[in-house]
Image (tube, rainbow, N blue to C red; front, side, top):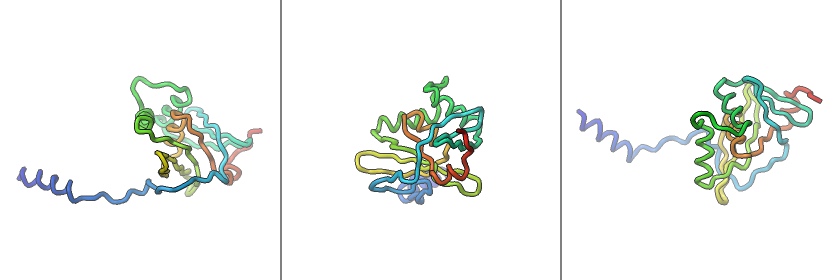
Length: 159
């Protein structure tokens, strides 16, 4: 029985191909930033604030996400590296640059983001949560952009 189990794993490893994952949006040649404005991330307890053009868009996140963004804003590490610290180190060591992140959609009361990665002449778009995108951007000195039409519609006047 054990031999059958392990041979099944071995055979499965050679023939199984995982399905295409939804969070990889695809490779692209160039990326336009038309219709987006750069925002300044801030955090107040578990509320993320993204401010630009006298508008503030804010949304709540979990305590662990807030902690990671807070550490990114401080430019400090916790007692042990967080997932976003490790991801940033991996990208740096494999010469992968995060060119920018965009919060580009608002559907069903949820914000969606895209992380843009570049290595040599390839650009990869990844679907991501805004909180993860912001935490990673803060660690890699990467700009965060917000779709201007959503900012105008959902943002609160702060000026």
